[in-house]
Length: 396
Image 1: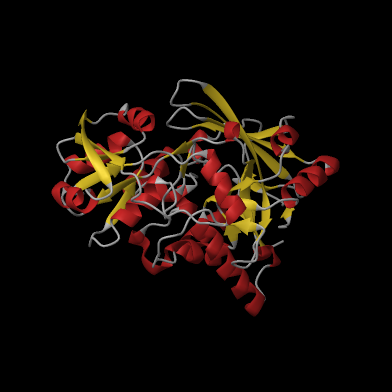
Image 2: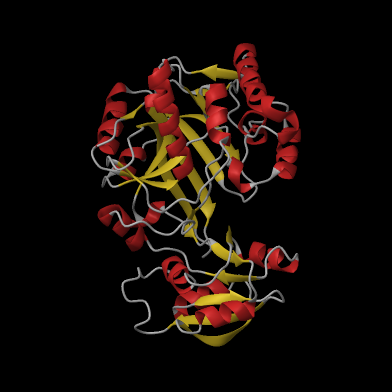
């Protein structure tokens, strides 16, 4: 089973005021450079200046990010904990049903294990990424700037995190989610949390590429005498139970027409009119047990799987679609949020879209138990962790 250890965190020095909203940002991969400019303007010390190096700075942008991080540390903008700690991370939000919910996890350093070695498990296949952005950033900064998201198979982890720690950072994001980070420095509690997480496998929920990059960087450090801290990587771990998960679907955008998709899918799905697509369409899909093909004008067609056409295919919308389109030449991209899908269609950024349903907890658990991977971009875990709540230098 993987090691899970406390670390001496690097945090914004708040001087008693723990609210750091203007210093934080969403994860780097859910916004573009235009939005990055917005966050950079919120505060001269916003985390995007380290976590999101801009193309305009050329090949030196990662060195510049490292210089900014060093400058902030030297000048006291950032402060290092005096001893290794865990950080409890709570997110309070309103879900799609209008209920107020709070999820609880813990941020620590998770062992970087070899692919296939067990202990840290993927839950979906990854798409190839030619860019080495995160690897270059890690090499330059010698730090984990944002955490991977892991799901623990340890029963009782949530209960062990309920007792509050010392609040060290909090913020409220654009979606109204309240993020609170609490430091845990009790040796007894640290030992208990470490033992709980390390007693069962951790399933990667979000950050497959970053974990793979952590493995590459660890191997480089082993070969060239890099920092020992590369043996582990900063990870947020929550228990794999229903109350700790909010999973949205990642919809499919295609470069081929609605008619071409209908032709490719007609042997596997029956069609029925869905009317104008809205955010309510997802709930109807769940009730009817179907997907929804969306035209550029926003009209929809329900796709109901036909019996006996998916034998041997996992009962996931993403798996079935992948199977049904396996002999049709096409390109696919991904988008969460029905309104965002409709906007991309209106802007002619794709020719057609298919809405799929969120993956159930049972299927996520099955992945952990069997090792059978989902197709790429099958799950979108929400709310997203806020970058800038803490960082992990790799020099220890």
